[in-house]
Length: 250
Image 1 (tube, helix red, strand yellow):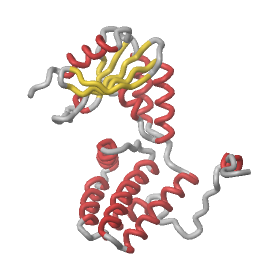
Image 2 (cartoon, helix red, strand yellow):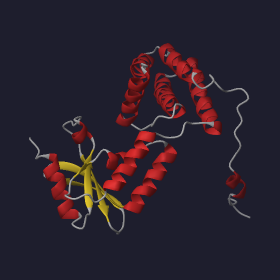
Image 3 (cartoon, one colour):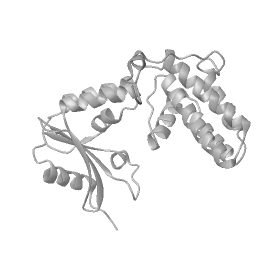
Image 4 (cartoon, helix red, strand yellow):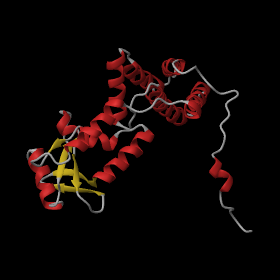
């Protein structure tokens, strides 16, 4: 079944569900030329004021993710995403195609584009040490073998941890699911490396019973940040942990 033009549907969704919109942007796979039979429409709407929210709905056969925001809420989510190194909100706006006439929201879109282009700060200090330790521990578990289901679970986690450590330590955006894969591809393209396909091939090998290639590529990632870290690792609990409320009877 052929679905209607995504831009026609997106504009209809905005007119129906957010008639007071100042601007709206359509982003995601349909804009990037990566749409599949199950792709949805990512529509971000800008209001002057109101309650920011998101809602999932279906319109003209299209699944739609509708993100309704004000300038303040968009900036708040951009800041939250920057802290976790995943530019979800900024990308929805910066890469989105305007759906309404006029230049409302243009300055905000440029602001989001600047955030995406700048990238996140590189992982350092305790956060970097914890990431190194976590991956080191996973590799030790992987080398130890075990039940097939457990080994598979550790392999997947080691793959993810290696990918995230690579990106975050080099000041590159991370992500989840397809976005993590896309960020790996983007990193390889910008740096002339092959970590993406190496991680894929090594994960497949590990799931088939041979963890050695995954250990090797993860060690190459760790080599960029000082190598494995286990013995001597120390991480202080945050100060707020000292003020945690008591549990149980007093």
